[in-house]
Image 1: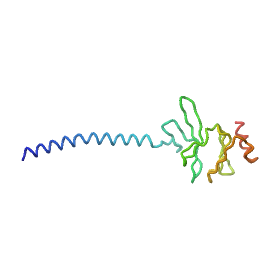
Image 2: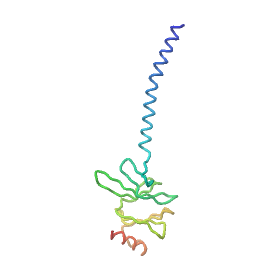
Image 3: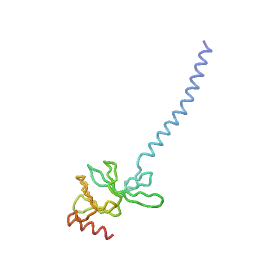
Image 4: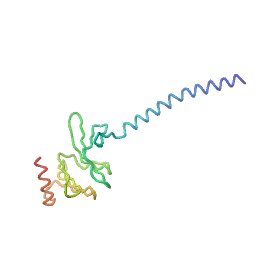
Length: 145
C-alpha cells in the first residue's frame, strides 16, 4: 500500500510540476497578446496604436470619427476614419473644424468631405459646387494652406 501511495505522490508531483510552467507560459502569452491589442494613450489622452497610428483629434459623441496619422517607411499619411463602422472615410491632406457648427471639413483623395459629427451625415464630392457657398469658402481656405 505504501508503494502505491508513493507512486501516486510521485506521479501527481510530476503532473503538477509540468502543469505549472505550461500554465505560466499560457498566462504570460495571453497578457502579451492583450497588451499588444490594447491601445496606448499619449500625455494628451490621444490614442497611439502599435502600427504607427496616432490619433490627432476625435469628433462626436453618439457617432465617433477620428483623424489619425499613420507612418510607414518614413512616409506620413493622414486618414479620416469612422470608428463606429471601423472604416476609412478618406485619406486626407487638410482638415478644419467649424467654429459655428458641429462640422468637420476635409480635402482628400475622394475630394471634398463635410461631416456633421452630431448627426453622422457625410457629404462627399469631387465637385466643390455641390456644396453651399459657405462650405465652398471653407474648402477654398483649406486649399490655400
